[in-house]
Image (cartoon, rainbow, N blue to C red; front, side, top):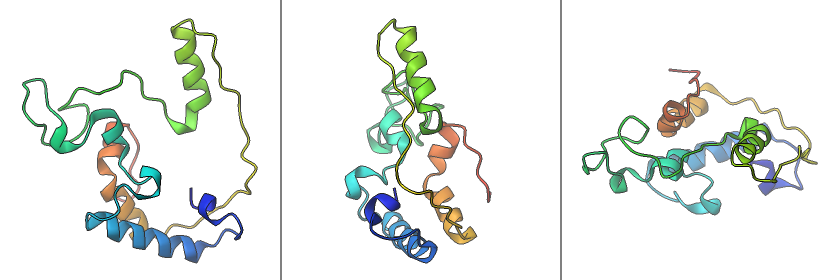
Length: 140
């Protein structure tokens, strides 16, 4: 995502860290949540809805996002790191003749070194995503 907006520039760790700190500060302040084509919206909102719009099985507004308190909008969640296999398996389960092929991104690889303070802010802001989708947090 970082390189998509910076195609003409090399992988710049300082620029990434500065941008990440700025974006996270805005998000934590409740600003620009839906900017950049909604790329910063927590993924649980796509699966379970926004906290204030989500109802648990009793019809009450759920206190937190995630599978423990809300019914998901969708029945199948595909993860980016296994998207091709997950999609192809899902299509096979429904006997649909659709397949994704492996696609190699033509952009150069960018190995960023994310400082602990930035990683901590990411893990805190997206804590519901980590929990709902079974990802390990590194700094908690």
